[in-house]
Amino acid sequence: MPALALATASPGAEVAPAAGDEPFAEAPIALLLDMSSGQVLFARDADRRFMPASITKVMTLFLAFEMIEEGKLSPGQSFAMSEQAHRDWYGRGSRMFLELGEAVTVETLLLGIANVSANDASAVLAEGAAGSVEDWVSLMNAKAREIGMDDTHFGTPNGWMDEGRTFTTAHDLALLAREMISRHPQLYRYYLGREGLAHRGIAQANHDPIRGKVEGADGIKTGFTNQAGFGFLGSAERDGRRLVMVAAGAGSSRERAKVSIALMEWGFAAFDTRNLYDAGAHVGHALVQEGAQRTVPLVAAAPIKATFPRGAAGTPTLTIRYEGPLQAPLDAGEPVAELEIALGDAPPSRVPLLTGAAVPQANEWQRLLNGLASLFQ
Image (cartoon, rainbow, N blue to C red; front, side):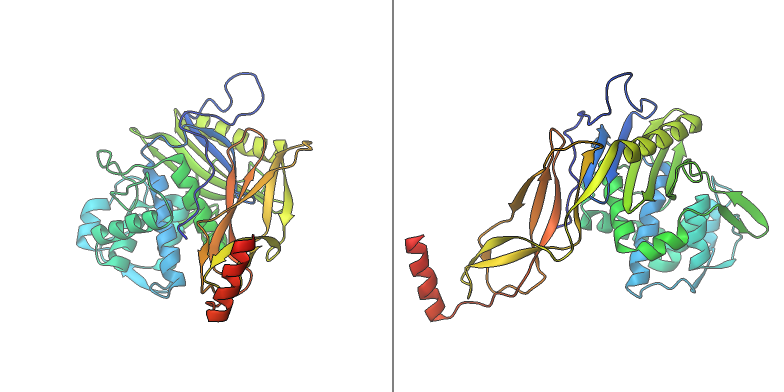
């Protein structure tokens, strides 16, 4: 099955806190996702394209994490700053002050990209891991398509201004954050959310606006150019609940910090997340065609949760959705369906369901029995 999309409101729609002034107005584009349930708690222009600036580096980090897990890249490898990278990025924007020919480990490059937004480190990593910056950017775009970032395109590995060739949406950035955190939790915890980085005797601070201000905050990445304004892709976890937020187009770093802190604190304070099914629990069944059994049990791929406004007593509407009937043979553990969770007026979320048992292809006798059963159904 393709990567699951987030549940989002239609363009321009809002899922907002209670009345008063326009909520979180400092950010013209904003989104708050509860990763535990997959539900979007707040959205403003979540599908409007914008320039992400240095938030682009989150895809560079994610792609590197993917390659590390696949054994194609090692944190202990060293890459040197080439003449091309030196010409393009020495002294340009935020950087680690890498020198021509200086060999640096992948681990250090990733720490610099994640915590001090190093443009030079992004280029050195791209050249070393893919052979050229252009080839690395092609891999970034392929990975974006793979995980469902349909309104995103990358033109650089670091988000430097490129006449609008690099663009994304809040919806797509939330998808990226979800995939990075869920696929690579250990790498995420190791590389993201540090105080800063000291390299070659130069200490620099991480400008993450929620780190140390919001309990449980552990990343992810700020962005700024004169064209893009001030943006932030952030995340925090408390008591097993993880929220992911996007704020873009803020007019200053102070406004970005204000809206980021307020959005996160509201998400934790105004909502509760409740467990619906444990991982592996039976959720329902799906019809099977040409199988030894006419149905297959569907089970939760992971714990399934629903997020409610705090104090609400409502019950979500649960709907199993799949393209069926499914075609035998089926292996146990195949992702074949989704559970749609709808609560009130909020847009529904969807989570994957797996086959709970194998269903072999039917023999002639079983086909006959299935045909007779269909006649009497």
